[in-house]
Length: 362
Image 1 (cartoon, rainbow, N blue to C red):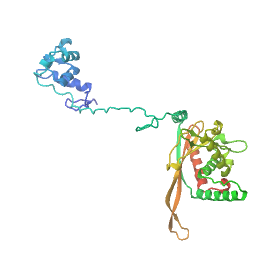
Image 2: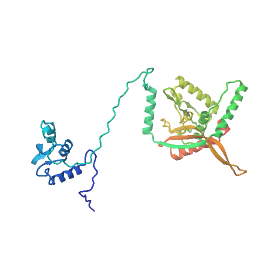
Image 3: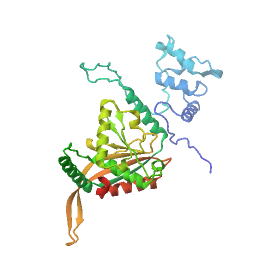
Image 4: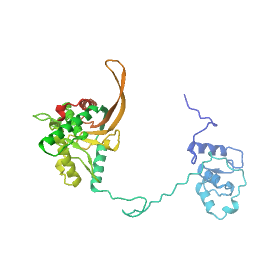
């Protein structure tokens, strides 16, 4: 079972620098040949041999200084820098066989030119805006989370036709109530309904120990709100115990404070889960980064219209209709939550979205 290397076998080499084995083999072959550059005439190692080949020098014109008459690399370099090179550079012996295949010409590296910074309001191809303190803080926190928190991802879609009908029904009741009481007309959004349903599903799933209290589960839901150069996460407290109208009022008040810069730090703390919704930008689905010390974040995608088929109970024929779907992706801290727990939470969430109860939403 030994390994035999045949003399004529191909040995992989680098285009520019042959392997030590290849240089040794080529040199040994040269020294044992009967050419004028045989062992009795010239002795050299791979490095000087490569220089002689590259510069087309006459090996006999180089004075060796190595032991037993060997030409060293320094001998070739001194010969190249000496004045006699010009008169002795024409080879009088056959050219040395190449050590390896000729390497292709290297691709020139394009020169990178950095344009100067252009102040805002002046002409130029770009405007270099400084990074705000808030942006640096967000970047540091999310980088820390991604590096140190093991993320567990779960995704699911839900049909939201019933949710849209529930929203229309609730808004109709709120309009009637405003007319009767003479108050300001109020309309809830899909985000308000999602906050309520997410809080109810999280309370029912009991995946988070911190939501349990002696009086029953209490779930605080944070909502990611994008500002001009910042990101706020106002928190709706006890969202599972509030109606969607109260959630709508709380959320509008907190968002207004965030946009005016008066949102307090404690109004962004204490959330058990954060909802990040990019559906209004046409994003179909995405995954979000957990914001410690929270252990969950829910990424909500946009609404997508599809054609679905449903079998008619009387005729047995398939009836085509339009349906609306929305994607939900959960990012969970795998140190505290398992795939079964996040899967159970998503199952409850989608079930409540596809069949919302008026008692839960109002």
